[in-house]
Length: 323
Ligand code: BEZ
Image 1 (cartoon, rainbow, N blue to C red):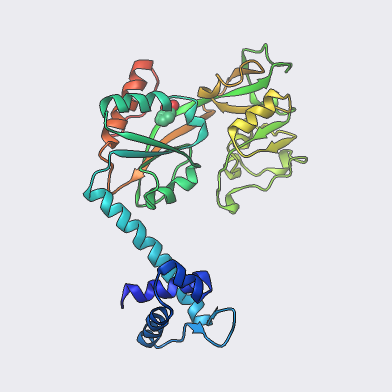
Image 2 (image 1 turned 30 degrees about the horizontal axis):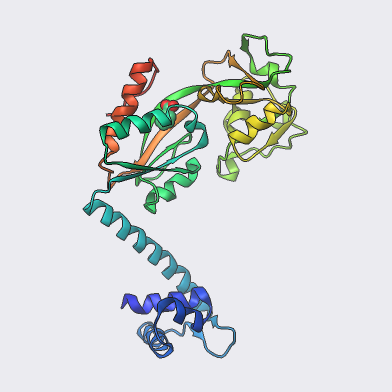
């Protein structure tokens, strides 16, 4: 089967118009019609309903389009990855979640560039869960995130666990406490910001106004990471507000709208309005993962990892070394 025929059909089906497909493919109407006709003859199925305007696909054509769309996308990303493998790039595309940007990421990048002066680094703000598809599509070469991925084509290294701290507005009654127990925070509005995208069955549906002991099963069933930490201490925030990311959450805390928990490296953000306090719970931590495709591995990967471990050593940060 000729790829040209599949691509002609795909473009017409996608644009639902022969004339738009002519403009995009720069092929003539007779050529496009001939390619689709040949495809239909080859598989013995009518794909385009020629009796309706605007153009429609037959039910079989609709099914075929869905499959061809997935195959052509896979082919594109395979070609991109193969080209990268054959011509080692001097660009490293890094996906990251906002919460690692406030920590060591800038230092890691500048040290990596010192070691590899010809390396161009591009940064892309992208949630942990979207990093898997971005790696597979060749949009990023490595990703730094806070959630584990379970995908056979992804290599994932746990770098370290970072302690959570409580972020309180500077008018909050607990700002003079040295160590805070999560149960002391349950009476205040908690601002949630994680984009967990966990399967619905793993997430306890929560009505922010009616959370109490009876509404929860076990902490393990609570998908939202901050509520999970509270639940582990048998604490149940009475009121929650969910926002799109950690910067917005800290903005609301600064405005006195509530409190939140953030990884320790964010404690330099908005310090005029926010007081950060340690939590007594040593296991209230957020992991940092480095992920990349198993194959091909970017040529800068080993140096990047070496730099990260060196920074941890220099700063006396407890970490987990992977071979
Ligand atoms: C860290 O804080 O450990 C870290 C931050 C960004 C990238 C990698 C590690």
